[in-house]
Image (cartoon, rainbow, N blue to C red; front, top):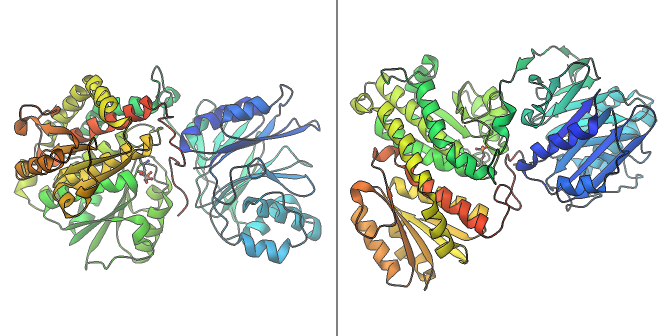
Length: 603
Ligand code: M6R
């Protein structure tokens, strides 16, 4: 969602604009930057649209040694220049950027700021006006007034604040929204995502919820809101900045789709020994093996990966597994079994909906595991255990490689757990071989991608709506396939349990409606083909995606054979490519679909 970059001690303009560009993938609709040259000149520029629109509004003399920048994804108030950040106070002394949502901003406005003339509709302006008011009315220094203001605020925030009467400092605060400090030689940089500033430093310090900091070019102090000093240990983030670049690809989405064979191989290498035995922390396996039921919570694509996880856990461990939308469970907590274990699937590790459930689980002493792509992310820090996907940075808003990595890692976990509790099926599960087949199979599908581009052009690009159908595990993939197509191409797409169409939805099928059938389940393959005939006879343009052993003459995409429970690793690939090409051929911004954000840090 929103992105933050700030720096003190170095040419702030380029570093901030570059950092914000690196964060573009997270989704935003306006951007802004405040610069101070420490010699009395300051500049504020804001623009609706993209970073390039912001750059176009900036004059060459707008430079600074201190600066804060922001990309905003509108929550309170439309995307306008006034609502863009940095927000400033009525005396034009304080400049502030904020990620998150201030829940009690209306009350604060009425109680403390009734006489202030607000320039924006944002919750953020309340923070900066309040700091200003407290400094003036209580004669406090800025840092103390900042902390006092934070004490009045309810909600989530990552904040950077500059006071132009003392501009060599950036004051920072974090609660429930990510924020980290990057340490440099003669400068310090602050960002909501380390990826944005990896070209400046690889040494970071994470702030925890309820912490505030005072950052200068060669010092930093961090303390709790109650004033207790903290000394977090700096760590090195060993990511090659090039990994997060598009290279020769037009869009990240295709790059990330094509990275999947490597991701699957990396997971096999990291989590299986040379004999194919799972390498999972024994404490994790011990903890899950005590459970009488596994609960998986997630959102969007990660939820869909959880549906495949359910099939894997139930098949190889025999432990009943439930999958829920975190956004639903947060406030309608499910009835638990006697010995539950909870797994949180999250690419970003920052999804606010999942965090609500995790916090509730922690209060109830339910043991928890986060499976995430981001080391040190909030969900990984707050769960009892973490397993890392190691899929590399996923930049395109549409999640692809995280989905397959989540399935592969759940398969590792299912095998490890099944073996621990004596499941013969788990012992016989040759995961090493199956993951190698999956990696080869994905490569084969990717190598034949032109065929999928033709199908997308022929059936999807001009279509208003589309359907994916499947049964069993194919139904789980149909849901993900539909999400992928609709989110990037804006073609309204539904994923359907194949047989359910005839119970109502088949009335939507008309001449030319694209229906893509996924067929990997030997038990129901013929039945699904029957459903294909039903829609075909009503004029649908049918595309079949079928595993080799079930393929028939005339099938469109034939997938290499693989263990049924891992078949989603292959089935999903053509559907990701169909989404990609439909979006690209419609001339859309594939990596940044409208209204969407990469990591959804508001509930
Ligand atoms: O970071 P997370 O995996 O927790 O994100 C959950 C969803 O927001 C995410 O999977 C979303 O549905 C995808 N970007 C869609 O492609």
